[in-house]
Amino acid sequence: MKLHLLIAVASLSVVSVAWAGTYAPVDDPAAFVQSVNWCQFAPVNCTATVAAPNPPDPSAAWVSTPSGKTGYAGLFYDSHSFSVTPDPSGMGLINSFYGAATVTLDDVSATFDAPTDGAGAYIESSYVGNVVVTVQPFNDVYNFLPYFQWLVNFDGTPGASLFVGATSSESEVAGVIFDVSDATTGNTVPFSMGTLEFDQVPEPGSIALVAPMLLGLGVMLRKRARKS
Image 1 (tube, rainbow, N blue to C red):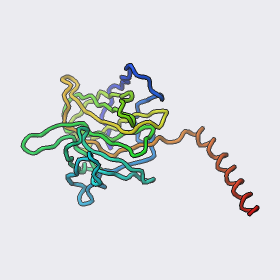
Image 2: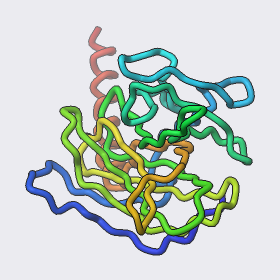
Image 3: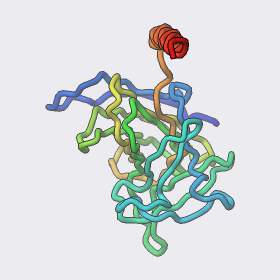
Image 4: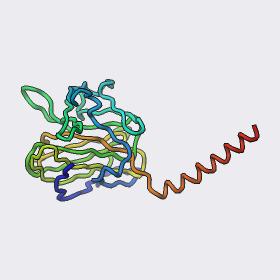
């Protein structure tokens, strides 16, 4: 997928609360191991209207690959149903706009049934001009964690996308909100959230620590099997 020019990245995380982890912006989907394509909501032509996720509606529940983790997705002010459509590559999109006669704009969000240590998604927009893309994670008691912003120029190219995300050193991210706003006015513009990625790739050091533990566990199990 073609990425838009990333003009600037800013971490705007100076607030008065203390957080458990350390945080970083992410612009590479390869940093995560779980993936959610929204076409699962719309098996026929990846086009459907999906019920609002609150109160929990099974039609708004997603399942990730490869591990089958679960959560919900939809508009942030989630009393409204949302539309799913494909982009030119076939990737599923959750659209931020709803309504027929009067189009209303909203942020798009995804929540996780089990907290994760980071998440991101592809963002697309038909809007032409400079925009600010915001990724706002929150924890399981709905406290906002540090957020990150990208200043980007969209040129209206169909299917052109930008991947944006945020990570934490702790597994505390219960949900993430995406917003795209005009860089001058601050008003939300029409946009879509593409494939969701989450769960950070384990660091080599962590894998090196886990391997001896698994080996030791295997030895213990073999010894117990012999005794029995």
